[in-house]
Length: 193
Image 1 (cartoon, rainbow, N blue to C red):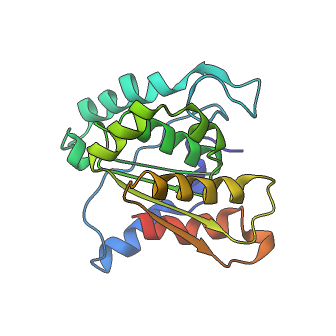
Image 2: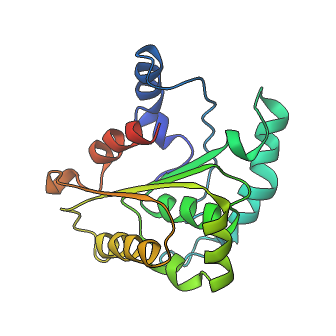
């Protein structure tokens, strides 16, 4: 479990981004991380965490993004906005981007659980996503031991392929004990950045 500080304290996001920037592999970006109270950043109660109830999706889309745009030197449009997450945060990032494709140009997720997302998307949602031309990237360790997660990534990949929605999915052979943990996520967030 984590909070808005986890990527900085455990994930090393500042050092990862700084190294990529210094090497000329990415441009200037603002990285903002909200507190989701151990939710999947969705409205209602998380399917896995019954004690995490709230309007987290609305908070991100309606409040958090606007607050970041108001406080910082952003380019406040879809073409300059991305969303990323890990584990249940990956599910949240994908859900928010898939249901609000006009908000983001890029979405990525690492080691996510997407079964709920696949079930909740309507044909109209899939069509809107397909027409939005959003860049979709997600990955998973082929050795992930968390029940159902790897299968859900494979299912999302298959669903996107069947619906002819452009995306990139990578399944990475990563040491089992670190496959759903910070070593894997640190490696893969560098790909997304």
